[in-house]
Length: 315
Image (cartoon, rainbow, N blue to C red; front, side, top):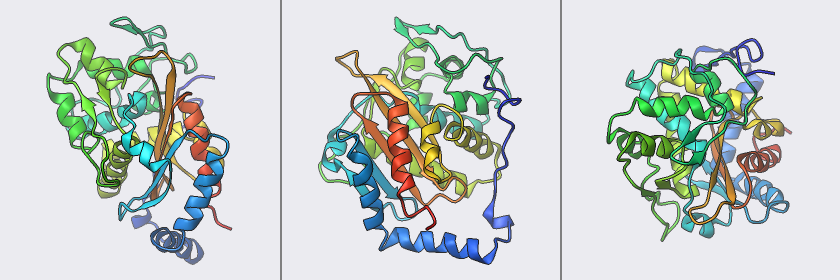
């Protein structure tokens, strides 16, 4: 099993604006939209509560894409105060903007070093052995070697600019007295690589990561025919389908998202993230899961359980 186009043939990005939807499906999509803004907050909360029973320490946040309204949450107060390294959840945020600025070629292929080490940090990839990856495949399999190469292309100060425009480094207004991200501007190529990989020099809250992925979903909607959108959307959809975030897609809802695993600032124990939105081609809700002790796959599993019981599943 390898992460290439032979195993994972390119999918089709659907644009609802150019498709005449069957009446029943169109009505269902409209119902989802109305429901998410009103009565279905109770259903979302029940879904979150159900998922939290198996992972009680998880911070879970579901936010409406259009209104930025919190639809459901578990440990919201703790989520507002939690600052943690975001791991690989930063990869699509940076890649999207580089593609918009024509600062990176999505067709460029990078060979995975497998046993990548940067400034003493062991960052070995856990994806299947594969030939050199392009941008879509690198996102699906969260290849650290690929994104370390992307980081080498950044100029000093550029990563700061790219991240700030997503809202991930600022308070969100989703909760009073929320913590604000800590970001140390990189001073060397190695520090830039570690920051872009979400390993060192940056800590964010689940609320800030939610805001960043809401920003990304809205960017996709506004620029749905751009190369940047098609590439990053496909990578996130693949990730939540058969890639590193695959467990998020087991809930019967199409989802686009990314996992992240990182170590705490003062401990070698890992924490896990999932950040994404659903439905994949018509985003209504952003879901972010932070698991204090675990890995990204654990957070993706929690997200999948939430989505399986969510109002997005037709009943």
